[in-house]
Structures are given as structure tokens and as C-alpha cells.
Length: 138
Image (cartoon, rainbow, N blue to C red; front, side, top):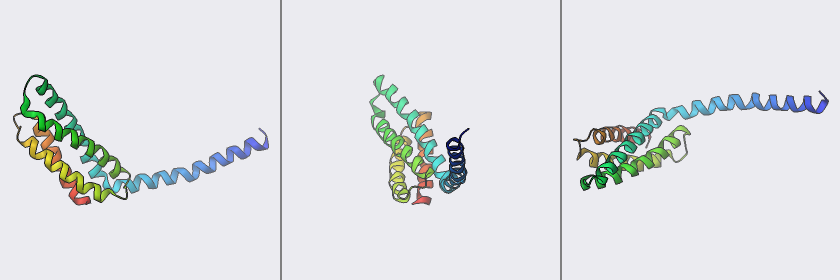
């Protein structure tokens, strides 16, 4: 091993020594909103399941779930972004959480109209929980 290789290896070791503690700090910093991130993830998953159910019902001719599919699709999109923003403790998280809470409330209200469908009930419940978490962050 020549001097350049040794210096390169030492440089890489130094970079790793600096990066590892920084990663630990980032993970700790992001965990301040872990319950919001978890709630947003659960809400997005429930909304995706609701959209799939609604589309299946629409394909079978049931037009009563058309608006439910639209609100669930919207909440799935918003909550995917919310989860990411909460995980990284984004500077605009509070403002985004405010909007996300409103989107979740709208979806919850629509899904509550279809409680005979288990996926709609699950989506409504997930939206209510996520809206509550959003209000804590807003």
C-alpha cells in the first residue's frame, strides 16, 4: 500500500467518523414527529385500500362511492407527503399539517357516509387519527 492509498483510507475513515454521528442526530431530530409520521403512513395505507375498494365498486356499477374514491385518493397523496415531511422535521411541516388536517377531515366525513364498507370505516378512523396528530403539529 503506497502513501496515496493510506491517505485515501484515512480520509474515508475520517469521513465515516464524521457522518455516523450526524446520521444519529438526524434520526433523533426526526423522531420528534414520529407519531405524526406513523399516523400519516397508516392513513395513506387505509386510503389506498379505500380507493381500491371504491374503484372495484365503481367498476361493478355502484356510483355511490365515486366521491369517496376521490377524497381517499387525495388523502393518500397528502399523507404520503406528510409522512415524509414529519420524518425529516421539515421547516414547513406545521403549515402542511394544517392543510393535511383539513384534507383528512374531508375524507373522514365522506367515508363515514359508507360505514357499511369496512374499508371506508377503517379509512375514516385513520383520517380522524391523522387529523388529530396534524392539529398537534400545526
